[in-house]
Length: 466
Image 1: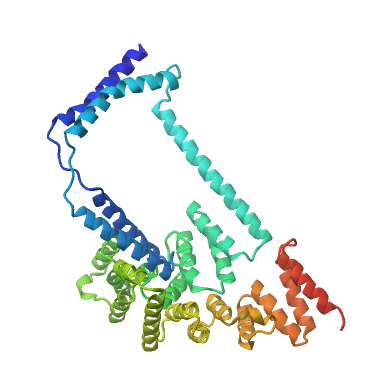
Image 2: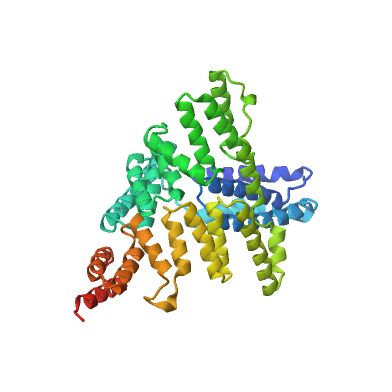
């Protein structure tokens, strides 16, 4: 009986596939049309990641150039005439369609298990739910293992970052807040993580923008006036405080700096309509702030090279390419002289000069970034890396040791700072201070690591009288 049922089902399926082939064939869209949709989605995802500070500017520029190149190629392909199946393809389709039932039955006879009862739909749903539950349990165990490892190594910044993000995914916002606070401590209160802490604080408070969250969002916005997340939540903070006009201004500015197809645009427009109606304010009376418009225009002018620019650069000789890059770097330097308050711009310029081998210019650019953000350990670290001379050994530039002291004052557990400030103290004859720093460092290094052995050797050496 089962074989008769299977044969009937196979014939019906083949008929459903073959009958449409009797109709006049329609033109098929080119594959490139689908590719273009994929690339548009990739551009939208890239913009979302940039707005949430999940990707660096240089990486975003490279990704944008590559996506643009592929879109151009797909657009050219899409302009070609669409294809349609000819008689040969129809004949092949009929042949395969007719043979499919026989092949399927033969395969099922060899590989199938017709005697095994099927799983009812309800049981499948239960099985799927059980699989989801098992996956969640596995993630929960991994998070627990990570938290336990961090208890043994509490200065692992990357570990705390991963823990904070994982706890956010699991919806354990109260615990995530603790992890993000630790991230802020280890990173020297770096503004690049302030937005994540602030958003987690809002989630932990059930959607309320707490004073601590608001202060962190304000820091983010001061560093990057185009940060969409900060503008959204600061508008929400104003709305929750009854400051309707300020909320409308913040959200209007957000729309002014957002791409038209950004995923948050519809929600922001809805909030503007609702808040304006409740406060009896005409939303048309709220215009984007001039400084926000200028910042958006400046950002658009600073976007990376187009796909055509990248392809043109690849055709240049190494010398021509280096000259072109130098010209771009010098252009950035000229812009920063006119807009000296751009912290990330100075930092980017420092890295660019470093790549070009201009060590003094790189140090000068990073120093300007550090002057604008004196508490950012990441910028101080960039500056120290530029000044570090591998061939100098312990006899580093005094400015390098000064930077390490500044890093240590902001991050007392910083491993590099503990090591190099210890070296500076030992060279100055301050054995007690060097010993204290290196013992603290020793407690933070794995006992079987080469670094642990190196620090132990230094400790033994300064403990031995001359």
